[in-house]
Length: 101
Image (cartoon, rainbow, N blue to C red; front, side, top):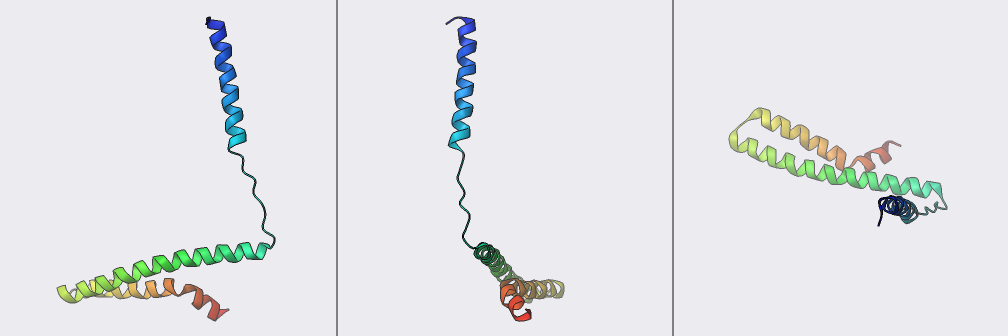
């Protein structure tokens, strides 16, 4: 191939590549029938993730309180108690909000 033919072929391949990427990555997104259902699903997902993080914090705080009794460290005990209360609030946040509303 000559230099000019290589350049034309290279441009042709770039165009093909761009077209394939553009057409291949386009996704049709269908809207839900009920927008409230979408909001409720998102809310359930967020509260589920928050509940999982709350359970992790609860587990860590129980471990921290247990270690503070072993080492007789009152500041670690207070920190563990605060983390425990925070974990309980995070775990039961959906129920707390529902009881307030």
